[in-house]
Amino acid sequence: MGHQTVIVLDFGGQYNQLIARRVRECGVYCEVRSYTTPLAELKAMAPIGIIFTGGPNSVYLDGAPCVDSEVFTWGVPILGICYGCQLMAHVLGGRVVPAQDDSAREYGKTMTRFDTGCKLFQSLPDTGVTWMSHGDYMEKAPEGFALTARSEACPNAAIADEKRGFYGVQFHPEVNHTSRGTDMIRNFLFQVCRAAGDWTMEDYKRSAVKSLRERIGEGRVLLALSGGVDSSVAAALLAEAVGEQLTCVFVDHGLMRKNEGDEVEAAFSKWAMNFVRVDAGERFLTRLAGVAEPERKRKIIGEEFIRVFEDEARKIGAVDYLAQGTIYPDVIESGAGAAAVIKSHHNVGGLPDCVEFKEIVEPLRLLFKDEVRQLGRELGLPEYLVTRQPFPGPGLAIRVIGDITKDKLDMLREADAIFREEMERAGEEKRLSQFFAALTNMRSVGVMGDGRTYDYAIALRAVTTDDFMTADWARIPYELLDRVSVRIVNEVPGINRVLYDVTSKPPATVEFE
Ligand code: XMP
Image (cartoon, rainbow, N blue to C red; front, side, top):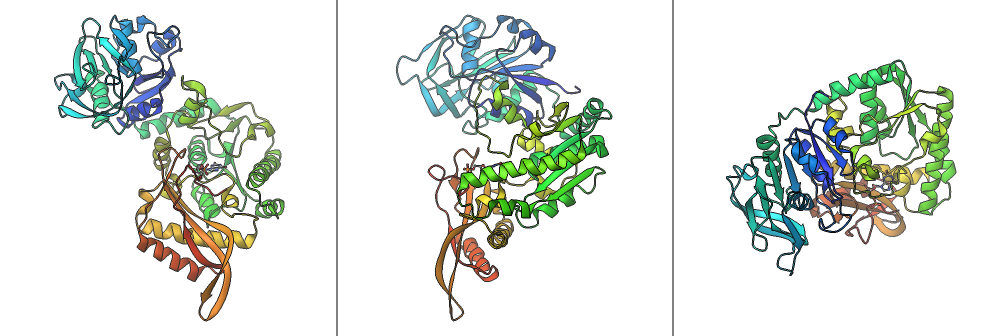
């Protein structure tokens, strides 16, 4: 493998992905594994350290997720977080009980004092805010453990048996609310596990290219390229690995933003691979004519996408591998860990059914989104592609409210390009998660020059969010809004009014349809 590995043992906590991201941000490779993974399998990974995650259960109840006590005899350092800490205490002979009263049950930000003599808190301030979220209480630490942090309600906020390299914290160092939490994780990795910090994107690229070449051999690979970050980076990595054995089919449904189709095509011109761009705009527009209902639009686009892809795949014939841009959060969410959250992905899906292939390759399945972006840079993809904001599969079709025509799409593309240009110029794109224009189906009266107008209103949307499940509308400067508004009504015929959406999600959604 060429790099050290830390195992994040998943007990079903809500922040588990965050733990894994923090570890990788420190330059140490880690994988999330369910607590049900056979011990032999974990041992075969030769971990330099193990982190037990939090979880919703109580360790003292029957059937609570547990771990074979043999793991404590390997000589591998362990950090237990929240449930993981209680579990370690419970298995090693301490006592965990339900908090008797509200004062010992802690949720939220808590002032905590640390023993900076403990390796976990070494070189950090001796007081700080920690993020607590626990209803159980560690009444007695196991034999050999010292108490290394305390909060007002909880004298046992952290425990350590430094001889054996076992550490436990009741709070969550992986969330941003814990001040210097990442430094605690870094201390665990570098001071306790003696990590080398050997996880770099350059190495990853090299070893991924090598292993893809070995796996694919002379085989032929097919990839549906959407122009989004994940499929673009997957395409670039495969192009680097197997060149002309790769065919990328880029279905341009005519619902892209201004210049987007050309940009995607240009980005891949440096690789000797087969790039097929299908200009299917007419086909999609014909199918969408007169359709105003959002769900119908989505369904039509999804179906048509598959039809177009099928037509192309038929021309290509049977392939050995179908490549997909699946990334690590999708893998974890689909049940690799204990926190099996089923998320409804609204992507254009169902492709594997219509193509003959032997196997699926998912070259990004162990990477987080920010790592995918880094890999894209490492492979030489342009910055605008790797930092691209999420863009819905149905494209501008769900940003033209009501029925879709080419004229409306063109108006929207121009207005959206102006908005994006001004936002980038003002440096707002670094701060915000997503922003775009949507064409409303409202027309209103205006006055331009000496004449009356009766034109469309365009809506601007900008949000900040961590996960897109909830989002806050972005407070962008009035002067910027003013510039965008003036430019749009002057430069885009057919629009005489600009609105800014000040609704968060919930109750609204990010997109308008
Ligand atoms: P909503 O509108 O559900 O959007 O608040 C949340 C995030 O998902 C994106 N989105 C989609 N992405 N296919 C996608 O790949 C879709 O059909 C789709 N609909 C919404 C949206 O842009 C936002 O980032």
